[in-house]
Figure 1: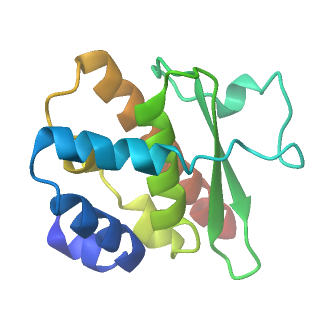
Figure 2 (figure 1 turned 90 degrees about the vertical axis):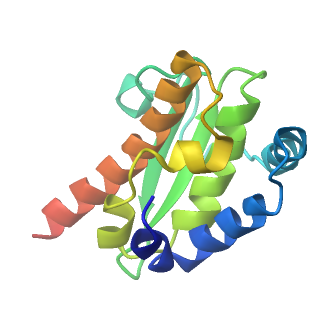
Amino acid sequence: MTATATAQLPKLQEILDTLELFPDRVDRIQALISISERFEPVPEAVATKPYPESHRVKACESEAYVWALPQGDGTQRYRFAVENPQGVSAMALAVILDDGLSGEPLERVAAVPCDLVYEVFGRELSMGKSMGLMGMVNAVTAEARRALAAAG
């Protein structure tokens, strides 16, 4: 991700800066596990099971779903379901995307590249896991683009 893109997203940049404090892979994994423990599934007021396929992240092995909730200030709040209880990476990324992008201007959210996944997790992920996590980022950015288009 470019420095310019993250500089315009201060909450996300703060998360990335914190993860940079863990250059050792084992320490980074532990930090991400700690983040995943803060994951809260989508509230029933937003969606109930079975979740609609229209919110399902394509190619995600952890069966992740994404919702973008419009906020009064024209931004969105991002909520997630991760159906695989072993989906720790998906849960960690859900927390990072919610904390880092909820409430941010839609133009900035829409510009987040999917390679954010590599900044968070490194390049050692399997192709399947990388594709699923990138799908989560793409789902969030698509929701922001859809809201921008609807606003005209």
